[in-house]
Image (cartoon, rainbow, N blue to C red; front, side):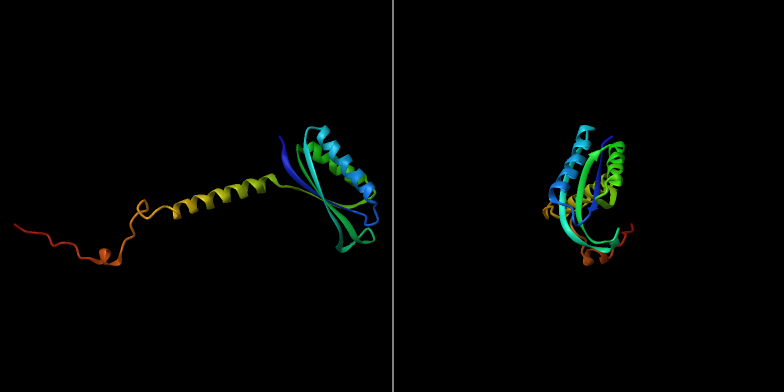
Length: 140
C-alpha cells in the first residue's frame, strides 16, 4: 500500500552542486525502480539551530515520496550510510492529508448551508411570536 512520506535531510554545506544532484537522482531512481514516485526540492543553504557534526550551516533538501514502507526504509538506510548527509527525518503525511480533506469538506458543507437563499432557509423565530399568549380555551 502506497503512503505519502516527506524526508527532510541536511547535507554538508561544502558539498558541490553536482554531488548533491547525483545524490538526489540516486535516491529518486531507487524509489522509482521499486514502484514509488518521488519529488525533491532543494531549499538551499541555511543556518542550523545548533551544531551538527561540527557544522553551523547545511544544505536542506525536502524529498517527497509516495511508496511503501520498505522503500522508505531503504532510502533511510542510504541516507544513514552517506557521509555527506549530517541529519535526516522522515514524516508520514498521508494521515494528515486525510484529516485536512475531512476538515475542508466540513467547511464547504457549512458554507453551502449559510449561502442558501432566504426563501429556502427556515424562517427565524421572532421574539414577539415566541412570547404571544396562547388563546384561552372556550367552555360550553
